Image 1 (cartoon, protein in one colour):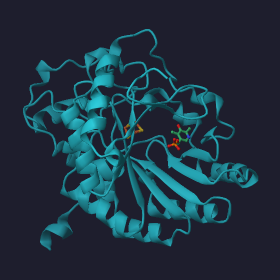
Image 2: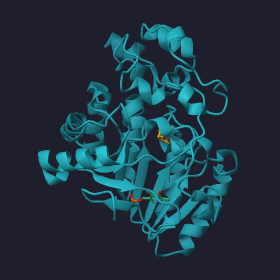
Image 3: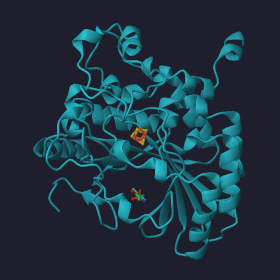
Length: 336
Ligand SMILES: *Cc1c(COP(=O)(O)O)cnc(C)c1O
Ligand code: SF4
């Protein structure tokens, strides 16, 4: 009981996220001198990692798979041909500020540009959020757009991380959505249930239960070590509230590019109530080339994965391509 009362709430957890490189090293018993920061510094895309996520890392291991997702490194400075600032070509599908309408029947709203964690491989690391996140009055424009197009049956709350919005803002948002009868599903794309499971409060679950649309939550978990008791508890609460829980992962060199890890990830996700949905090939964003897995290795890995798991535990291997009407889905071979 006492422990519960002294626990920080999620907003405090967020404020206390680690942004200092030296502090991260100290918490993990690592020597900062042995790691090489990007020479240009981190002003563009700072270090940011919640303490609860750090607690799942192995101490004194500079190759820890969770650490490698958040640790800024010198290789980010490399300019590699083919890696650019807008790899998925989002800028052309932006009819209204904060709204992306790329795929039929679905619109994606970037409700905030901020995340609870900064993942170094993220394709949004150069996204011009400042001009492209709707303040609440801009939501009206987005809702007007959705209202007018009756082919839109699903609204995807994305970002940044939409679960950084407080419950009051989420409620205001969903009330406006509820007034549009052709919107049948709300989908939430969030890494927060994994990296900051404290966010899944009783109040949040109460909001979910009030929604009249079906709710799908697509989490983002890349490694079985990310799933701890707090994550499992959050997922159980969401599952009981009737949410369909899916997961997307990104295939990352040195982090989850071994078949045993992918098998363990699928098993751990399913045990916690999530269904593997997508395994994304890396978006070729400037500064992330060192995460790219060799194509032959991907084919071997994915074939082995398909053999080792029941079909429903094999995520679809996909890639986002600029200008295409859907994500490209690969079979066991990467040529389509
Ligand atoms: C990925 C994505 C979606 C959702 O695609 P699904 O294949 O339905 O998961 C929708 N809009 C945009 C812009 C996307 O990038
Ligand atoms: S949480 Fe998602 S959107 Fe945010 S930095 Fe990580 S990968 Fe990017």
